[in-house]
Amino acid sequence: MGWIKTIVNEIKKKHKTSDPFELASLKKIHIIPWDLHEEILGFYKYDKKNKYIFINNNLDNEMQKYICAHELGHAILHPRVNTPFLRKNTLFSLDKIEVEADIFAVEILIPDELLYENMNNTTTIYEASAAYGVPSEIIHLKKY
Image (cartoon, rainbow, N blue to C red; front, side, top):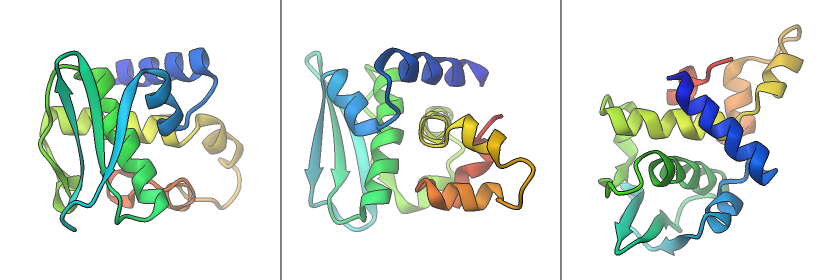
């Protein structure tokens, strides 16, 4: 799925940021913090040419950033597809569009440069995932 990494790199280069909240704003995607059930992390909605990312505002800031990146992946990769709720247990999803959104999130949140800089020291990919707020369950999706 190198095409996703290409899209991410183009977006980061064009907008000079990898912050998913900034990117959503620049792309006119509305971020809506919402008091969702504890099992629901967030979801993406497309309605009448408008794009919305709903994020459970009960999550910590790092998890909200990851959820924003994941849902931004849907908005960019699957713009007209309303996605089901991202639930805590769907981090293990095999659904194609969910995996693609996870790849997008991992690529946007963990810079390749970090991994290249740390190749010769003792930093593990799991430590990098913790440092950048990426759930360890999906860190294996990072390509470098």
